[in-house]
Length: 266
Image (tube, rainbow, N blue to C red; front, side, top):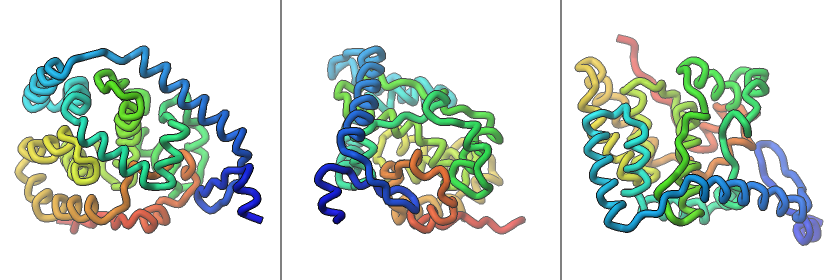
């Protein structure tokens, strides 16, 4: 029976459910998502030569090291110095069924595509409720992610855009705040998983800006945990988060092999 259904339907495996979706309907949804991103890509893309990308990479890296709050320069460095890493991420997504679905439908995470009020109404402990609590408590918004400008291939540009838009979900999953200690810890996980030079740089040099007490906790607890988590957990870019808002986050942790950090109270 399942084989007959698969002939004209697509079997979607989401949290706790198996959805049978007509392939022609899925194709329409997929085409809409792909077309919308391609339109956004064309409107923001800036054509650059290899030499121009090199200059942008060097300049943005220098500014980012001097001022880690320059999100625009960090974004430029990620795009112009991360070609090999983005291709690696694309390959990892293409090798996974859930990653393939993300690439096929090209979902976006912002206040226009995600019903944030609906997430607030979800039960405590679900991914959606935990995510909106993270956004509210840290006073951040999913609309703050810059569009990709300097990646020339639309598929690679989407992978980079997706990484930016799920960054706050990485924080949510890992239980890390947006202070410097939390950011450096998340950057270690991202560096191991994505191989992006901007993440590697943030992980290595971000720790230099920690206060002495923070640095002690970082070396003893946060750094070993981040390295272990980034190495052992499943590839976080392959999670279709929009299909999992109602999933208990503890269950998602078990699925992804994430063990939450426990720091003894001093």
